[in-house]
Length: 142
Image 1 (cartoon, one colour):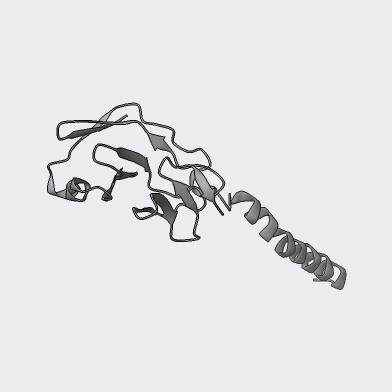
Image 2 (cartoon, one colour; image 1 turned 90 degrees about the vertical axis):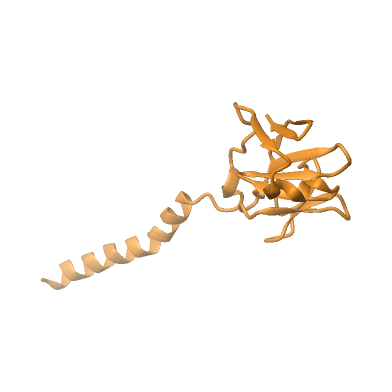
């Protein structure tokens, strides 16, 4: 290999190494990647039997459970809320704080109202909220 060929190949290789992080980074969504297209509802209703032991935390006001992609919250005697359990910032699970009646992401501290509206970030988008109704022991999402 001649000196000119060697320098040319090293220059090309170095350029590729220098530029490749920019290309790879542009492929990632970063920031709010977990739910860039938030789910705004489901097509088929989901029925949950509240008498089952896995939902026993919903027997008391302030209780909440995780079910599938949802956090189901009992915020009052007959008040329930169903939201996405994933923070819109980076997709970590959220939790319900009964004392303040708010939703918190423990990863970076985003706070949401009980309706899923952003109070403070870093999240900039609301949690997906779902219609919920209760008839007897059956809670219906959707």
